[in-house]
Image (cartoon, rainbow, N blue to C red):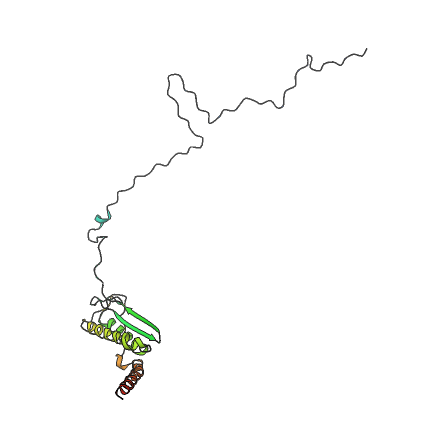
Length: 208
């Protein structure tokens, strides 16, 4: 009979286990157990950072009482000329009309304007109307005469104002030449002569 092999684990020392875990590390998030009869300690986070101490803000005075000599909520009064800021101004609009066949355009500049700026705009807008405002039937009969009459009233209002200086850093408009000294104003003679010729022929046909 053969002899059985010796048992390697009988009485021999056991080799250490390479996968055996050592003692567990302390859990930083574990809450401490309260002692009997004692206060419960607060949990302290390992990521807690000291909060910076806020500095007290200095007391600011109310803006209404900060500068009594300059109230911040002061409502501005009526302004002067819309273009140059001169104090002597009148609130009146200046108009211009352009009529070409069936296309009509109406231009309006609202005031207030001073004497010099108002008269300059009246001359510009009136010359434009006299040159381009007669080339449609309604413009010839209605809109262009109305515009010219309106600008005539505006010129009278601006002429009653006293001359005044513009605001600092702003300039007044150049009045330029009067309307009768501008060649473009005499373009109106052509449609007016045509209208007179048409009316004369109509009267002649009715009379005959």
